[in-house]
Length: 169
Image (tube, rainbow, N blue to C red):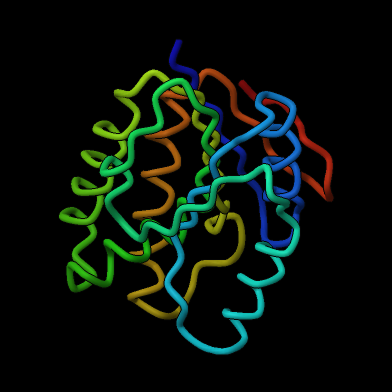
């Protein structure tokens, strides 16, 4: 049976840790699908910290964009994170919000056609002040619309606040 769970919140709110615990509570051998590109050394260190938290029970997949290339039927799969996934589409499509949104939605739909439990982690980046940077404003729009799209398809949605999961759907 297909199940979609969305975990959202601010930076360092505990989203990934909660998602990992949830995945392990649902499966002894979950899949961790990382969507990030390594931009610089600081970001590489962030990725390493995430990787070090996971033990041998995890199957790790690095996939920047085409999640649907991977067969995850009957598995629990944690996708971390939607923000980085959207970033990849956004910049590959020259910051065209509409094209990126359509591409990410299509890939989301293709991927989640599988019978699996999907745990998506995302950021609430539009909760703060409006950026002076036009590219950042456009990306925030993309991210917000994609979060809404996933939330509309999700069976459960959690908002992380200071490490506490608050069920909102």
